Amino acid sequence: MLPLLKMFKKINFLFVTLFGIGKISKIPGSIASLVTTMLLFFLFHIINISPNIILIIIIIIFFLSIFAVNIFIKELDNKDPKEVVIDEFIGQSIPICLYEIAHEGIKDTSQLLTFYFIMFILFRIFDIAKPYPVSYYDKNFKNSFGVVMDDVCAGLYVVAILVLYMVITS
Image 1 (cartoon, rainbow, N blue to C red):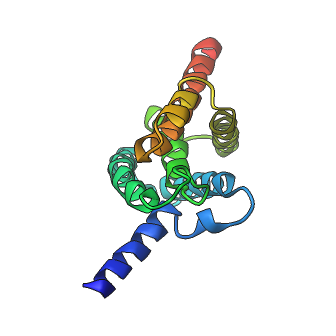
Image 2: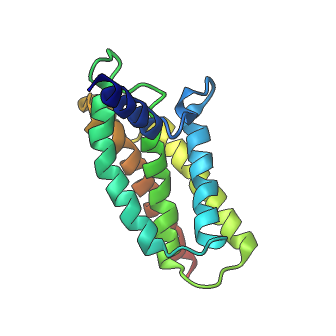
């Protein structure tokens, strides 16, 4: 049973650290967000996977991450360790995936790259600055739910800004 438990802990570690990205000493959250942005670009525009399929996968990852992060932080004093970056993956994925769903079809590559860059920058700003309710989850939920939900809120802020921009410019 012990080798099975050890293997489960290793798989869980790889999941919550996004295959070890979280162990990078400098800015692991930003690196995880950047890798997520590049991965989603690859999935949507090189492999041409439907945004709806990716959205379903992100929702599944969201629920799995609540469980996985809970196991990871259970014995730690710090309930939001910087090596946990699966939350950055989820938060960064939300605006990109919703943008792709809203703009399905042929897109101008330069405009697309500009929006991806803007979504990356805005997500990092909201994730670091933690405006309300991002800060609410960060301060009041010292558990896996808080770890994940502050990034979900940051991602939804990016969506709100992009929707506002698109309404104003249309």
